[in-house]
Length: 430
Image (tube, rainbow, N blue to C red; front, side, top):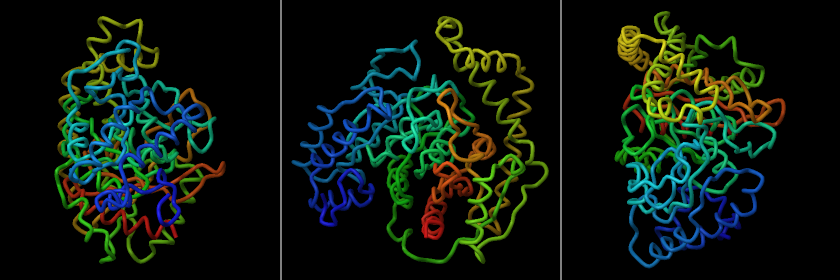
């Protein structure tokens, strides 16, 4: 327990980091608290594919005996099983790679360890980070999906097993599970975080990001991953000028269900006077279809080895996606990339009169059933555009599951987006 009687495993990352840096908290005690929580809840949640408890405790003792190493000193974290780790197997959620032991960490994992973070384990991903689900359950209701493909990372953070976890997004694999599990999810600007050592699906779309329980926490993680100290500057989270918000329902708004519509109305009331409605220009209205084609084309070719050598070990849905991607011609893909480049240039103009855009994160709360991961509809356009996004949980749906919205920033303005997200989240959560 801390002096405020908050159980250690429930501390926000930035709070724990402050105590660890002051030597008012030992890393070994925080790691033990998280491991105890995992032992209690993992049989029901099934968020992990591999734990490294002994190595984590040994690292925590080493950190306690030495100098403070960085922003994440002593903080436990989990890593989606799409990232290579030199000391734990990496299977990419597929039987093809069962037991595979990489020789090196993915760059993002190495950066976290360099900053003092303690790896507790590898979290469940869907099959090769696509739509075929893993075994993880939603921590708010075991019969509902946690989303995907970063399912284990989002669920583990939501259930206070970990303060931080890494994930990736190619369509909606950070924002959607954050929405379904009720945590803060951060997708950085495309190409802000190195992807070396992460199983590749789409060079155009793949983005490394993470999960936490507060905006300050993902900002701490983001500062390490991007090398941009502005993301975690304490001054950014002081009370300052209100951001100018564009309320962007997006062209897909008609597919938002009652829960997302109610969350939207709640947000409009809470943020009244700080934004105006914003409609995307007509030429940006067809980007969901473009994103689907880009993802299918590039995934089919990125997984060429798997389809040629291990087709019988691929799920039927993934085989279908690959077939769809192979049917798209290279000339069509070039055209889609040209449309994407033009749209990326056009969208930046939206951030002249607006600091951030408020948009839906998901159709609604997490669907019932474990045979799917939900629809990433409301994430596809922003992923294609390469814009930074932060999911903010603040409401509940008809079945008592979390609902929230996302803030979207201009490319490269991650520090401004996170500062705005902190300001907005405080008002939405009142």
